Length: 150
Image (cartoon, rainbow, N blue to C red; front, top):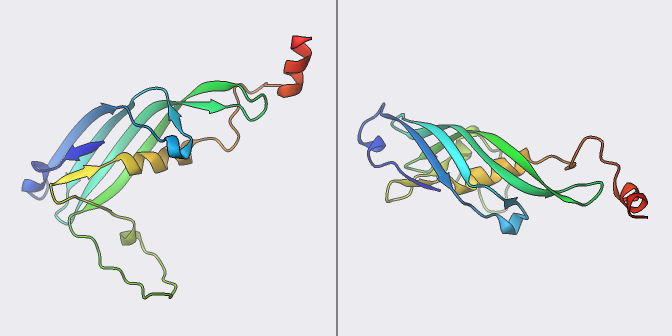
């Protein structure tokens, strides 16, 4: 989901509200989205970074942890990220441990003044997935399915 920031970057303090809808695939992560990802975002140019806040919604196909049936689950995530024109220089030395700080978690604004929200959305959607996906709260699991078929 690429977004053009050219107009926003013209002046410090510029703000924009963006709504987008796009089909995205995360097959490598075994995250199957059955609906487009719909985003509503508010962007602010602070001069050093562009703040991106808002939410994204979609629907995923999951497998129940108990009965192994496929089911669809709506997903909604909050987005709160920073995108920088100039990325901070790496502070680590090869082979040495380094403590990470908040400014180390900034995404780049590309040379063509665009940002790609796909990675942000991927990470946040993966974090929004339940640890144990259940098709329903009272799912009895595989054993109950065997009894029903007899």
